[in-house]
Amino acid sequence: MLRLLAACGLLLATCHPGMAAARIVALNSDMVGTWGHDPRSCTVETDNGRVEVKPLEVIFFAASCNLSGLRQGPVDALSANGRCYGEGGSFSERISLRFRQISQTRLEITFEGMSHVYQRCERALPVR
Image (cartoon, rainbow, N blue to C red; front, top):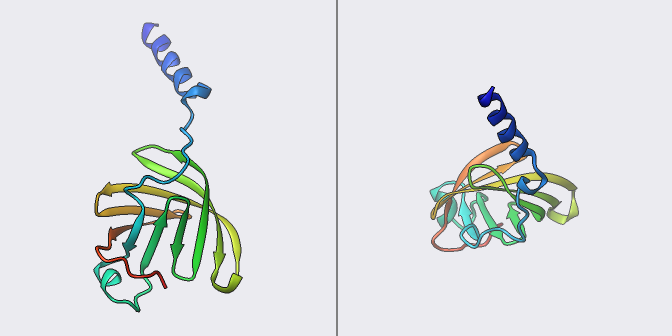
């Protein structure tokens, strides 16, 4: 009986409104920078595998996403909603993004359920 009461208390504590995912204002400064899909992406100017992460924006090849609704998620991940615009205004849609800092040089970005671990580019080439 005592175990059941303890389990119910734990369940109620995790559902309490004060325990909801914490809202944050911008991405962590450690996440800001230029990231490469692979080593080549960081060194070859014509490579399309770079991502530029700004406090409230993510720029991919041919698309940029303005971030809103940032919140702290599980496992040190940050989640956000994004409004993305394609090159030349070819599309505009809302998406879901997740950012998880693995180390100072590695960042996992999940875009609509597809994850990839990017590496920090030492030299910030422009995102094309």
